[in-house]
Image 1 (spheres, rainbow, N blue to C red):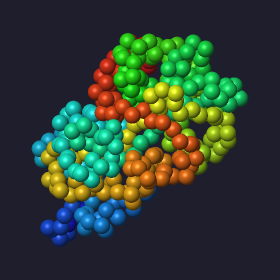
Image 2: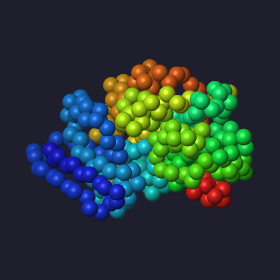
Image 3: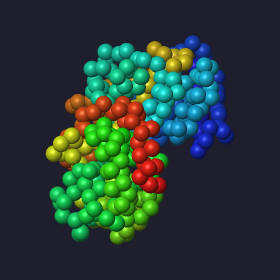
Image 4: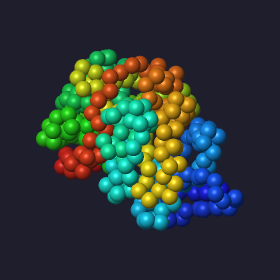
Length: 342
């Protein structure tokens, strides 16, 4: 059995590697993961206890891992890529990094709209992209949809991330799916006209913009708000008291959701172990660890999210297949550029 543990920094170069050899012949799995949550240790340990398959990990940022696998080529030891956001899964798939996986268990437990149509990857947790507002300045119900962000009444009041952010790319891709390219471009231009400031990095920084008075409306994934609610830094204490939130588009298509997901890699040397790992991620036990590690929503029906996440309330999610977000990503980036969204 081999124990392999690597950490990737900001780029592919400079990888620190520690390898210790042990008895050969036991099953193993080489996992490339951009997740880094404390609950993952229990996730991996329990998979090994249940199956006898040892997990060897390479951890790093999603894009760096994709480049690593590409550079390793046919000799890559990677069996599974685990990363966040459909845009990154799409980039890996476009590079030919995944192979189709046929599994009755995965097809039964992972909703059809949260997996690749041909089984190249599967979503294992979701996050909702919410709209937040300053409760002292905006009444509940004044803003209800993503489309409302482009309303001229909100000129100079909106904080949102840069166009290079994959969360925003996927959100715009969903608007393209709902309304078409021309309407999506009009929307992007309208949002740019409503910027309170030039976009900055970090979803949490958008929420802080409301707290500081720089803006009255912000967009951020649900788990950033829950993190501030349950474990704020000293400088952020009291921030959530100022914030109202909206699950957008409840009167029509539903709220935009994205996934953390994984797929079996094209040159996986341990394919059977890789499929077993994906099936384990869809188990009730793993769903609890997987979702709670980052305050996300489980994908399997009947598995409860963390109490703080459940406390946000029920909502209707956009049922569109999330794979569309990747397909629409190149058009989304062009729209951002034409709209002047920095």
